[in-house]
Image (cartoon, rainbow, N blue to C red):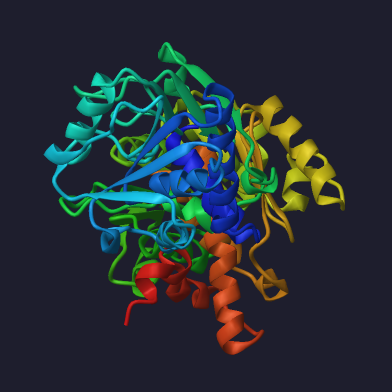
Length: 481
């Protein structure tokens, strides 16, 4: 079972892993044609009603595999408005193959001619809401025909995740869906064929650029909609909490707060005027600071706890007291990690240890990344937390789902890159569930390091990652000149 959002991620990850989208479309169209051939005898009439996106492209391919049938392809709109290159190439292939094609520029003029089978390829899983023209009128015509209806991926007008429609929808008899079943199809009285189209398991296991599809920015958003992050750290060190907080801003969070001992507050503020510094009494965190921290944390979307805190006994006691009382989302890093195994909390914890810190927490590791992934998954399940274990292959696991990330390079052994990672993950945790926040955080942090090394070679500094984070997270925006 896979949601429409997850399917879009997996589809793009497959391309990033070397499986061309054109190959996937060819496999999808072939799968649709197989189902049609099972339903319709040779010589019977087939009408394919196609939108201008990749859903329609799947049907263009299917038409080529139905040579023993009387096929007509109806394109809803002008050919020049086909929205993707691969769908456009497959439309042109129909012309060269001299397959009957009709363009429907006036939806009221659609004439399906009472075919034996209609293929609904108007809209795919990524489209929700009420049908608009010309799809609405075409749906009426499809439903009025005395034909068997085969839908591509999901019936047009149906939400693939819920099975619900906002009014009019195509009443399909069969659905050919790809890679895995979509949740909403179980709520429909329809025969479902799940077609495996060559997407490798690695597209779900490895974090890739497709995961960045989760990132979006509502043009009508207001300050705070993308998160308020509190970084609790500092005392023995000043740079670590500032790095984490600055990384949250570079990763799209709206506001970054730093709660640190008053003795270093001015120094932390000096790293950036963009930070909101909240001083705590004393030279290092201790239990007397916890009530104020809890009051401040209650106003935040996530808390990054640990950068630069140190491991003094009173500091670790304060970490335990905070986590015991906290019920929000916390990214736990550095010295604070050692408290996690013994604390009982209602908080949602995302822990970011390196392998040495993982072992100090009571976990085990291995050289082989796949064996290590199994060990991390077991430990995450035991602790009831999400783990992001740093390494040449980062391992991200919620105990139920486990991902591997391969971005990053040996130059990132320099100090401070883990503080940046904690900050990126803290920003992501404002808007995503922990498994996705950790996966995107790991990918973006490593990709930022790769960008720096590609441009400047080794010798990178943790601060170099900050300026590279936007390009790592929003590559398309950063490539616009």
